[in-house]
Amino acid sequence: MSQAWKAYYDEHRMTAEEAVALVKSGDRVINSHLGGAPLPIIDAMIQNYKAYENVEISCMLTSDGIPFAEEQYKDHFHMNPWFVSGNSAKALAAGYGDLTPSHFSEIPDLLRTSMKPDVSLIQVSPPDEHGYVSLGISTDYMIVAARLSRTVIAEVNAQCPRVFGDAVMHVTEIDAFVESDRPITPAPVTKITDVERAIGGYCAELIVDGSCMQMGIGAIPDAVLGFLDGKKDLGIHSEIIGDGVKHLCELGVINGSRKEIDTGKVVCTSYYGTEALYKMVNDNPMFELRAVDYTNDPRIICKNSNVVSINSCVEVDLTGQVCSEAIGARQISGIGGQVDFVRGAKMSPGGKSIIACYATAKGGTISKIVPTLKPGTPVTTSRTDVDYVITEFGIAQMRGKSLRERAKALIAIAHPDFRDELRSEYKRVYGWGL
Ligand code: COA
Image (tube, rainbow, N blue to C red; front, side, top):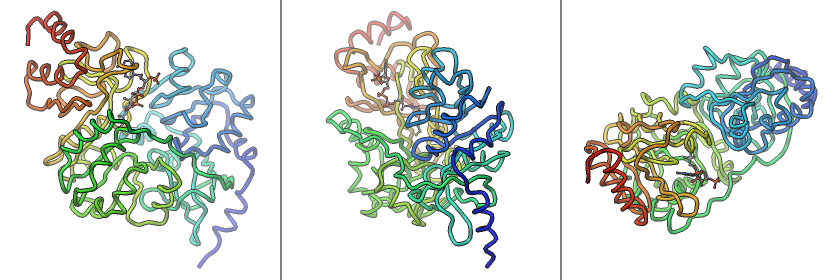
């Protein structure tokens, strides 16, 4: 077997400082996010910031050690992500950053058309004996970006898992290798209280044996997963998975046996959890990372029956319109894959899309169920797409319900302290009583 790849790899191995000299002013740089972020390379670009002018940075989340959006770099890096969080939300609000709203599923197509990348920054596993590495934490838009970029810079992390799916690249597709041996950034630990348990219990009522699930990460999804030990033959086709699924995979409750596509496989586009999750997926053919234009394409999602999608929101109005990305006009996150999965679940035979959220925010002082969305609030999921809204007070079905029935059902799951006010505001705003 040819070992030519080894010579190529050795020739292109360099320090992070040398690698980031390949980035030029005016470039559009795409970087991997969450635990997949190649932190030593990002750090070297930050150290080298004075060498760059007008470098556009696009990615999803910018939390967890991605400082391009910090104000002191604004004359060098221009943030134009598809999702804002932390420092990029601040950069947008302060006027020196931007946001390109987009369904997560669409990003590979944007990269091929209107947002062509110059440089991709990825994190990969060490090469196998054939010279293949894998984007073991997060393949999402990066596998497409990398193949379109002039320059691909990879952190080769000895602790990055080797995974299956659309996450595999040959070393000859990469221009610079920066070796590291560091733990993958873990997801924050979630705290499940009685409130999350109540929401999780209602969501679990809608999950039947054989359901194929999508859910995000965090306390609510983890609480839902805590109720599923007694179910059978669950499947996963998701955007991201965290530690919550590990226990159910080990029990055999999640086995994917009834999935019509990718039967027997747990399919997602990113992993975000602890070392235990990363160990479970390492070299494990049961788990496949697929590009986000596969995992999140509603036309693919609906090929499985009984898809249940569970996502959260900022607020819901009394007709069922959902905002999941802003507080009024102030953007705090993005669309992500919410609409992709809501629509995929709706199109799936027997599918259900669930918006699950707390009844209140800010220590119980604000109802998340509101008569109308404030001016400037973007609608993330339309009222004709949402099937169920769930809070700790119950389940409100939207699909097939009239405006009056929706308002009644939503008020019934609002916090009791806000129900009278919601009823009287409804009459004042919409002109008819309930
Ligand atoms: N009014 C005012 N503030 C509100 C609010 C409301 N109705 N709802 C939430 N907030 C505030 C919270 O108080 C919190 O503020 P803080 O950080 O200052 O404490 C902040 O907004 C975030 O709320 P929280 O409940 O902690 O959000 P979360 O971490 O559970 O995330 C979403 C909720 C909706 C922002 C998140 O799910 C999201 O970004 N969704 C869109 C993308 C998506 O669905 N992807 C799914 C595929 S994985």
